[in-house]
Length: 405
Ligand code: AMP
Image (cartoon, rainbow, N blue to C red):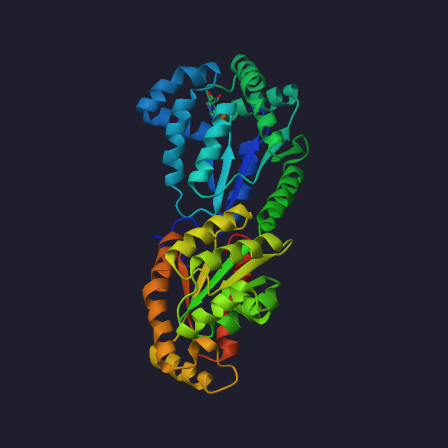
């Protein structure tokens, strides 16, 4: 089965889940990480582990950090920034990131915000594993018997906990203020804590509305497929054509302008499209997601859509393109132009050709852009409506399944 290409060259798929595991040394952050990483296909970023690797390799960074780690103090934020960028770049196909032992200072919390913005995403939550000091010490001493870590001895452990209290605990306020802090009692069984964390992760994973853009030449069936997908999955169908029709039907000022533009077979300008789209997204509340048809049609519109989706907390769009050979498109459009389903913008051959050319010149570059960004799933549109729908539906379903989007 070929899902949206998880191939070698497509970085950062649609759905991202970014979680920070927080807590004192010995809280169980490392232990709890494995499950989340494999279940959600997350890139694992443990600054402590990365630093220990640098020590092992005796790199410049490792040498700078050695004595600080051995004393149980925190290494500088400058060093942390350097190792982070490198590690994020090493996980181009992750569905998001799990941070362990980072951020450990308020400055690092700001750094994380910047990193997330750069990746066009955000931290979903910080899970605070609450474990009393004496329990931490007990666990770390136990671990020290086999871990081989120079910092797992009582004197250094006490110092690490002191550093935690002084420099790391204030990070909780940072996330409390942003509504991202979730406290979990870390003293239960490993399985019990894992179950609690899993239910938090699942809730975070499914809370963002999904978005899907359906591309295809006029006549490819994109409109009817997108509408059917919206009905099947409870998504809001956002079709610029339909929005314009409503304006025309109610004879608004915009509607009259659009009718004139239709008569010429031109594209409706962005000055009209964008405010309508903005209004549509703002008005639609509590939906599972959006499905766009006929938008974005130009590169400019695609940048605007990306911004609007981000503003409304949606996932970046999953993009599918329904492909139908040009001759068949012409036949379908010609047939339609002689039925009641004929649209004012494709009632003559001249207008039809113009629309096909517009798609080729203005919209194909948009599809290419999305191809480079997240990958585009190409779907053969020549089968029966039901066959094409079944293939499209499989793609949409994957958006709601953990780890497969
Ligand atoms: P950990 O494996 O997370 O317990 O980290 C081991 C040690 O690495 C810490 O005691 C610090 O010296 C250093 N370290 C790890 N992560 C950070 C961080 N985000 N900021 C500063 N120092 C860190």
